[in-house]
Length: 102
Image 1: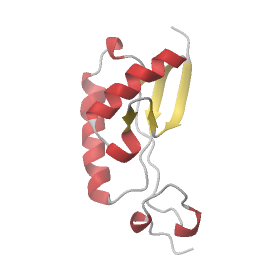
Image 2 (image 1 turned 30 degrees about the vertical axis):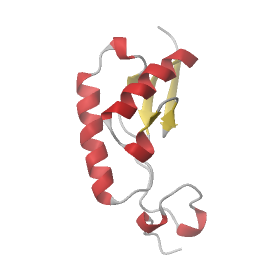
Image 3 (image 1 turned 135 degrees about the horizontal axis):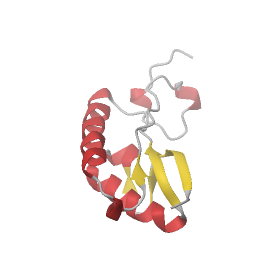
Image 4 (image 1 turned 180 degrees about the horizontal axis):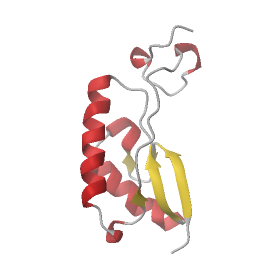
């Protein structure tokens, strides 16, 4: 089915991969994104502590491996954001996770 591909989405509808980082968020995002014409997407991490990011990646890999077309839009990979964001330009990031020097 033709549709949009979203290459940078932290969250949509009832799911927030960027700030919750779990399979439930991805399931909700897939379910809700397809309703607005998105057929595939790259869930995007936020600038978060490394342990959160590592857990998020494991959760995402498991979700991607087990999701079916009935779940809605397809998560086709992961878009990683940070942790090299500069603190003075990070409007929506967890500042303690930013490690850029400028």
